[in-house]
Length: 270
Image (tube, rainbow, N blue to C red):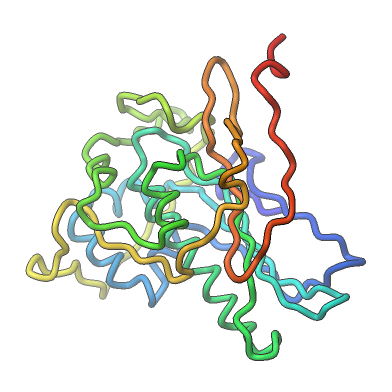
């Protein structure tokens, strides 16, 4: 169980059947720390620092999103598998933030796959990547995972100008016009963490990518949606809102034999 970096008892949980899998490594990472510190994402962060200085100084330190990863060995076959889980930021006008979160998430997954290649007979371990992405399948965050890249001029980057954060009495209040279709739950509390970018210069304007965002290419490459083509209508159904926000994705040569069916709208009606 990995709690978010906030005052609420909220986070991610991963359960492993010990009789079937041996846990080789467990790793948790905070989005706000990893984006700043990852050498592989240094250029991305420098361009973000240049284009959205207020995000880096005022919003990023308050982000509580956690990434939870485990590396396991299948006892029967000896195969090594990387498991990853997360719950991305919820706000409908934070699509640009979820894009950065997905990029960090994919980087962590790929780092563990490369690290444990030797324990897998020299083969890159397969991965199962899942979580509540608070993103519709058509969103840029979901597309970065399944297509592997998002351009710097994608429309979702424009949301950086529509999003602001204000703290009142340790509560999060997001001052933005909510749009239907993405996001459903709130993170209570704001965990402010002062971040220093000393020694890290914003990317010179001459080196910026076009548009308001940054070009992202997932280090994990395109992943496959286990539920594609199954007719899953939604994963979230509350107060008249329904959408697919939760995913099980695979990396490597997986063959999905079957999936649990989702409930129908009729089954959820009182």
